[in-house]
Length: 137
Image (cartoon, rainbow, N blue to C red):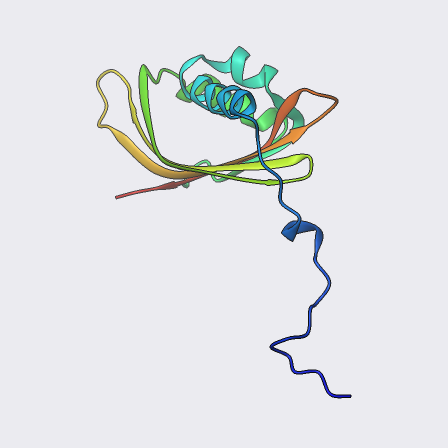
C-alpha cells in the first residue's frame, strides 16, 4: 500500500504541542514585561533567571548572568513604554512574548524595537530566561 505525503501524518514535535494561557496568566506576563522596562534593575532581576541571556543592539550585544545587571545600571530610566503587536506562543512550560515597543526616557529620542522575551514556568513562578531587542530605525 502506498501512502501519499499529502495524507501521511508525521509525528507531532513537542514545539507543535502548544497550549494556551489563561487571561490571568496573560495579564501577569504582560505586566512583568512592562515592569521589565519601567521598574528598574531590582524588579527586572527578581523576575529573571540567574543565568539568563539577553541580546541588545550593539553595543552592548549579547549579555548573560551578572553582565546584564551591570548594563541595566547604566541604561535604566524608561519612564513610559507602549507595547504593540503583542503575540504569545506557549509550549508546555515555556512562553515566548513578542512585540514592538516604543520606550521614552527624559532627554532622549523615543526608542523603538522589536522584542522577544522567553519565560519559564518554574514551580508556578514565571522567570524570564531570555530577552532580545532589535532596534527599529
